[in-house]
Structure formats: structure tokens, C-alpha cells
Image 1 (cartoon, rainbow, N blue to C red):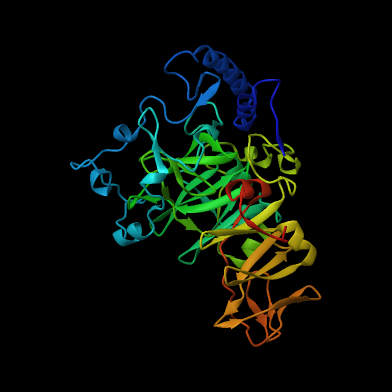
Image 2 (cartoon, rainbow, N blue to C red; image 1 turned 135 degrees about the vertical axis):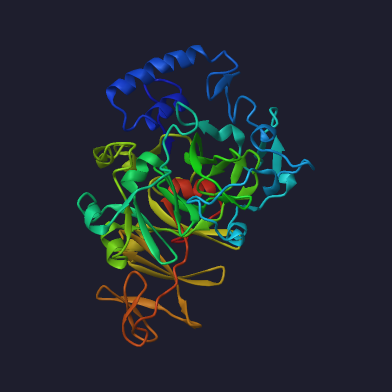
Length: 444
């Protein structure tokens, strides 16, 4: 696996230039070029650039004293906590259950020994090499605009511009289903949303192919997430607009700032096609292609050219080269251990009855979803084995026929639903970069 450079420029600058200019017209391009010349002229200044080259190394992290004492108020005892923050109302202005915020707030998962402090007083997570956090965009924070007031449309209106095979991220909360087309997320990467006053963010990194949803709650209070302009292992680094902590998208961990060592809580997502999602969720709402940011036509072009088919990355990453870097995998975490299933390998067999850390897992290729699905093979206390008969999913114990969405269609278990095993779908290089000791199917 290799990374490219542009026009002989150092890889980080050339690739950053490619990465963040999608969707711009030529006038904007000219403006950015002129701005780049001014930027280069300002490198010697203590201010004026989001990254400063010193002794041939990249100085990363918030500049201009963005440390915990300046961005995060402290209580009288000097400790950071909810009592020291200005009160935030719920995203819709409606009072919500405080216990919900406490339950789904980011959790501290690392002790003090895992947290370092740099020369500017900024905390960081020692397990993440800070020298590998790279500047991925001109303009600093929010160089890629998140969608903070999302607009939605119904199935009929969305179907006028959303192809049957279009990839979408789907979420369901309190029985409310929403679909987020990847071709829109390619240009925004983060959607700050809510359902029934429950705040969450749907995130997508085009460079890693990773879609992850989080409860956007820190210190028991709702926050909005934005694009930091930084990358780690070629993956999106988010930041929350309250504490300005940097959050790694794939791991969900705070890696730099006041909440280093915390982890955002994850919400399961479906990665599927528009065709399958609307069949299973006929009342779904869909993220509109009219968001008052770009014109609808902007979303009709994929901004990365042949990136998904090329065996290379735009930015450095330490993933395994066992498979094509962009091979799709789905991975899970159980008891602190990780396992990934390579989709093209599962597609060859159609189905895998697997076990990981004691959990019985059905892995099946779905033509409608153009992806694999993971289900719990234990239903009402009964362990099931599955097979394909003439393309139909059947359990061997009861001969019930199942849909590839996990619903019993015909037989003794008709009407039953298999539980989904939450997973992350991403490129091979990204999964192995973040989980170097991962187990893999097929066995390596």
C-alpha cells in the first residue's frame, strides 16, 4: 500500500490540497492557490497557519493557546466537569431526560497514565502517535462544512434523485428511521441530528469508507461535532464545539484536548442500498440534497475519482497489505478483542456460521444490500445454524426461511427477527491500521 504526492510537493501538502478541494469551482480554486502562496509566506509567523513547519516536522494540535484552561472553564476546585460548563439546552430547545444524557455521555476509558501534556499544556492520548496526526485541509476547523440543521424528505421525493443502488447509512431510533446518502456525506462528513430530542451525529470518512454514528453527548450535555481538518491513519478527526477535544472517528476516542481518554458512545448503523432500506423502512425520511450549502447537482459527482478502486491511500496509514487496501470489511469488538470479515471472501461462500468470544454469529452476503450482514445466531435461547438453499436463507433446525434483513418469512419461526450484531464497515487498510492485532475471517 502506498500514498501519493502531488506535483512533487511533499506528500502531506500535496495530498491535503487534493483532499479538501472537492466541490469548488475554478474561481474558488484560484483563490485557494493565491491563499496558499500567502500561507507559505506566513510559515515563519507565530500565527496565521493551522500547522507550522519547524525543524522539518509538523507541529500538530490547537495553536494559539487552545488548551484546557482556555477553552474549558474550570470549577472552583480546579476540576473539569458538568458543573463548570454553561448550561446547554437540548438541540430543539425542549427539556429532555437528564438521566438519558448521563447514560449516553462519552465515557472515560483511559487512566491518567495514558494521558500526556505537550509543551503548550494540551492533553493528548499517548496511545496515538501525535506526530501521525496530519493536517488534512486548508482553513482549519470546519474546512469541510458539517450539516448542523439537516433537512429531510420522504421516500417518493428522494427516489427522484437517489438511485436504487445508492449507498446509504441508515439509523433507527425510537422507531423513527432515517437514511443518509453517502454521496451527500462525501461532501460533509458529519450530520448533527436528533430524534425525539435525543442528539446524535452520523459521520462518514470518504478516505476510510467508514460510517459511524455517535451519541453527541459529553459531560452529560449535548454538543455538536465538526470536521477538525486533521487526519489520523487517513481517518477523519472530529472535534466537539464545546471543549474542542479532537475525536478519532473510527475509534470514537478523544485523542487530543480536555477529554483525551474519553470515548464517545456508539450507535449501530446499517450500511446498505437505498433499494433495500426503503423496502424494510417504507416510512423512512431521507437526508435531502437541498441543504442550503451546495447545489443539489454537486452531490451527483463522486469527488475522489478512482480512489475506491486504487490500491493506495492519499495519506499515510499503517494498515496490512494482505488484501487490497480498499477491500470492504466489517469488524466488531467483543471484550476488548476485534474481528473482521472480508466481504469479498464471504461473498464467495455466501454464508458463514461463526463464533467469536463465545458469541454465535451469522455472517451472510446480501445482494440487495451489496454488503454482508451480521446477526446473532441465538434466538430465544436456541442456537441456530444457517445454510443457503437455492439462494434462500434457511436455518437447519426448523427449516424456517429468512430474509437477508433477518426476518422470519415462512416456517415455525415466521415473524421472528434475528438480532443485528453491531459492526463497522470500512476499508481493509483502515480496520487493520486501527486494530493491528485483529482476528480475520477467513483465517490468515
